[in-house]
Length: 455
Image (cartoon, rainbow, N blue to C red; front, side, top):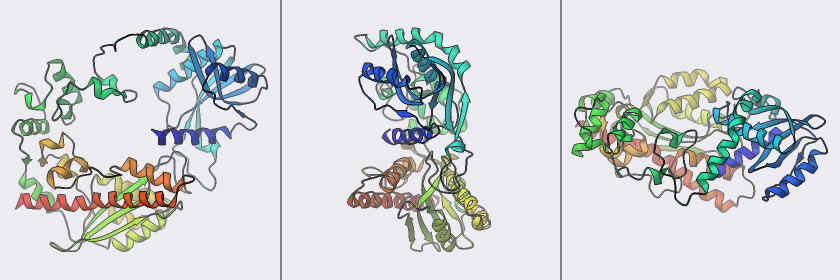
């Protein structure tokens, strides 16, 4: 959450540069004081950043208020997303309602968001990085609802007991609810109906019938083949194994084997030349090479040393390591293939090589996504985080960095952040090495166990 807020702040500060001479109002956490100094600043008829106004029970801070005439303003709301979403209209409508109620005249409302087609060349160009959409009409249509919504909110807030709201898809839309675990606590700890493969609609139907556990689904319920496998596994507690299917999959592998995993960052503001907003930029890889069946795996790894574009070095190293033949194995391989492809678009001299590598890529997710193997402890997920513990003794428990999102956040924090102690930087880099290594080492364990099952 802090990383999202920090990125939003950086995006907002860059957007401010499009309005020279603007005034940034220091945040005062007493709304009346913020409103008082915002009204004073409005008299100067200059762009205002973070101006706050009060109207009745509403208080809102404007990302940008831009003067277009005496006492007439345009409202600009900045979003760190690559498109306009329905919930953004409510955000702007609430602000327009508040500012106009406080006495400002709002001419137009705009949403400013990230243009994900922008390619950085030299310094970031905010004129090209941001796209702007006029949402005045949508905001005006929603304003009549505002006071009713506010009244409903206060009525709920003032209740002595939490309202009993029926759970549903609204619990995660448009944002995940922070108390979802409380409301959904009635589900069994393992094997609940929402673990059904591609079965959210079916799960809600079962919920209406009072069925909470996969193991309790009756034979009269229509299920897909994969869902039927799940039900049987959860009833018996035993894994489902398609030995022939697994053997056929393993038969597609050609030695030497190259087990590869990337860690990437995807900043809203492109960090390097020849990159786009939100593009996955690799900063780390782990690679195990198994030259022949039974051979000891050789480990190679790389973690970018600083805030210099790591793509050319990663491409150079991998081109030397991956050879001309043999299977390149990744888990959810679309990610690795896309990362390599985008990197080669920035450095075209590698495009031919990347194309040849893509033809050799094998996705280790395939047997699990295809339900050639399913264990009830996977809880409906085919991710490596769920597959690894049920097939091997390895897991991501008790690791300081245990997923790709945290890896990206922590790398960016210690690489681009200010005032990071060297000891802290080295601690995080060691945790990154350990995490990325487990991803690839885990794939070796999965392959070994699949081979053992077939034998």
